[in-house]
Image: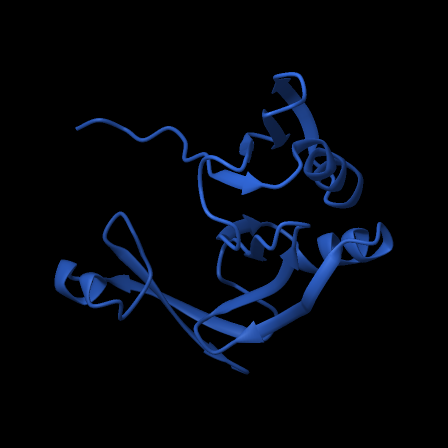
Length: 153
């Protein structure tokens, strides 16, 4: 079986240079490369995570991206202090994540959440999961295991 090594979203943006500035200055990404004069395509990175920014051609404005991090609360403070467009501060949800929502200048929303599903106040139990239950969306799976979470325990 072929191993997927990365998924790299391509966001359609109105002005690549404006988007680069936002992702670097407000969201803390680094510019990896850009192409064209004027800039028509670029790549910003945060660790091993890459987002491509494309002038009007690929993708659709208003895309949602889920980004897992190890500390959503610490990231929130940094983004807020840099003036990022945080639409929702870190919040615990009943489906077992603690996440915040950040929007870029072209309307793409980033659901940034605790990666291990062990958000503050959540109790999680690991168990085996059948393929049928996973397909039905009843739980989250990792190599056949599921993490069932409840809040407040």
